[in-house]
Length: 156
Image (cartoon, rainbow, N blue to C red):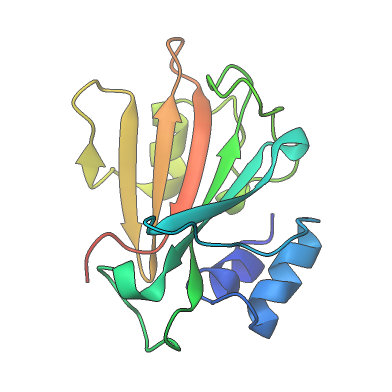
């Protein structure tokens, strides 16, 4: 996964060229539709282990820029590994951002990303804050990476 293409798409809204290029690069088809009463919707490519989260601009707590009213903004991209607990998702087999892979342990992640800025209470979930985005890693019982998510920052 080319991190630059992903980061250009993250924070883009459906209909923008940077998002269209990213969707084409990961072969995700369709248009996100926000169900009434929801603030997020998803485009999934379960057979490729990929899930994209779109948030209605009016529900976003952190906005990096202005969006047209009602825009659906790509706020999160999740990559699922084997045993991630998502029964309908096959493992993602492409290149992960930052050159990571699903055999990575917390030590491996820290060698690439540094110390995490947040640790979940169960000790299996971690966050790294970057300029313009955040990475979340969920580790399996054996300590290996099972889910990697790249999303808009959690705070400004």
